[in-house]
Length: 309
Ligand SMILES: Cc1cc2nc3c(=O)[nH]c(=O)nc-3n(C[C@H](O)[C@H](O)[C@H](O)COP(=O)(O)O)c2cc1C
Image (cartoon, rainbow, N blue to C red):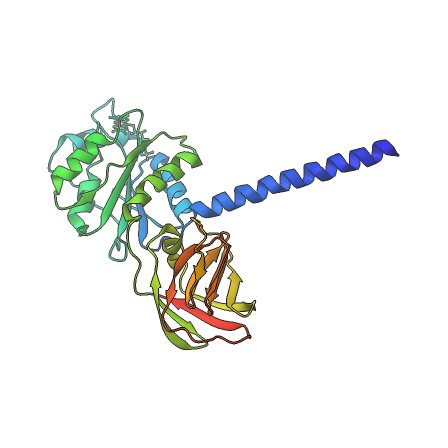
């Protein structure tokens, strides 16, 4: 009997420590997933290696993905680089611009993750066809490639020389078996580009009345704004705040503000959004989201709140 009780306790403890692990991993995973409606993964892949990486990037970023399809498909004989194959001929011909079969709409994207294999130390010529065919000015191009061993640096240098007006980042070479972690690191290292970007143009409607919200310049706000539009029903608490637990967690950088002012919008923990409608001193820590101007007393009922861009 005693043994059974001990066994029961062990199973109980193991279950909760394991599920605890799963929950923790889940929240880490969520943190890396952003809605990226302004980014696209655009790739050319002759034998599927770059395609695999492109799909992983797009999946992690939750972004669109578009293949650059050659009008004339590259068959194995066209890629037989030990012989005088079509790919070799194109790479040796500075004027070669292999045709692209599909129309590609890049107008709605600010960031283009551009993927290709390395052919003879650089990008395939079809990538130049792409740059000739569409206007990439004002967009950020983040190249990535796969290869037997060659790096991407030479290709990036040549692409910058080809069109010096373009904003082309250093990019990264992936091996065919790149891990999810490699992909995450690549995405995160390119995220810093807009890490200082101020977010503006967000409106908030409380019970259908429009207010001005001044947002903080931090990662929490940038990820929150990426989730918009959002219509929420926020519950009453303590006669001074309305709150809701969001579906996904946001980055935090919490501290104790000492004093809360009516109209302050904070994140409590990593997913509880709070709007304060009374001023008071606090001993709790929060991450600041922003401040709503001229917020009136919101009463004791739940409120409907709409955040939109
Ligand atoms: C014509 C041709 C030239 C290549 N040149 C290089 C090269 O210079 N350096 C290298 O590391 N790999 C080279 N490779 C290997 C490819 O870059 C590699 O297999 C790549 O992952 C293929 O990507 P894909 O499956 O998306 O087409 C070459 C392959 C071909 C077909």
